[in-house]
Image: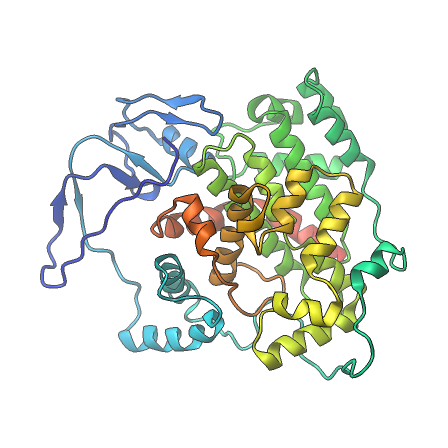
Length: 435
């Protein structure tokens, strides 16, 4: 089973000895070889991966990581020890909480999910210097519009006052192949290999911990055979679309940090989609990858407005998203929606991105909720930055819709950090091109 079923931690401060309980679900990072499965494990398409009663091996654990399995049901009793605290004193933890709490000012720390995110943030970011969050445009004096009318950025884009990059032909070809039921792995491999750099990046990703195959995959055709046309196609589309903006914004904004934020959100969206048994996890990967592409347009083509937006947010203590309408005449999600429609990408992809700050009102609220939760988690843990200083609020309805437990965040964040390393080569290439 891939889904939100979780181990309950029992904490008795008066008893430091391990507590023996009848337990069913075990975190993936605590699974050991020779444990026996109590339930079948299936992939998001419902295909059987491992049968109930099988003893777990090292290769099985790699399969769990590949499909984003966070916990499995095992047979018998297990011993649960107390969770080890990091090598920090109570004073250090308190100091970290005090430094991080202002970044969580827009969220409800009493919500169980947000409370767990705050705890993980303290553990992972507590010793970092937060005086200038990575990737944020530094504040500097910028003339305020005053009585001048607020510029309508989206209108300027639609009127072709701003020349946006054209989508590469490979995107259209990939779309056609993925919508053709008769297309073969050879067909999509032919399109991908037209771009040697794209093919090289995809093979690095496929051979990384992101998928966790035990043996090396040498060709795109083999990768498509193992993962499917849609999976490789969507992955190729996402990497290609982000690559369109190589050169990135200037004026102090770090493209590398933006890329890390985007890919971390993509990875976590994919993991959450696998937990929800969604068939097209790679489309969710692309949704997470492109969720802030509208913000990238703002930074690159409207740098003065972007600086004013950041200064306004810093001065008011508001979220960037809350200030965008007043500073730009639209929001970054509006720009993304227009861009994806112009590029004729699937409506489901557009909606996941358009509603990632308002998932409850999306045409498909579950998919939008996945991107929403991934974005909140990535911001909370400081995995790169799209420019936002504060952690955006968690939509309680979206959280309830996904039927998750806060205990999933710790292992998901570990998996995401590990899988993010698969894209280091790509990040390095983009960083070099932005200089």
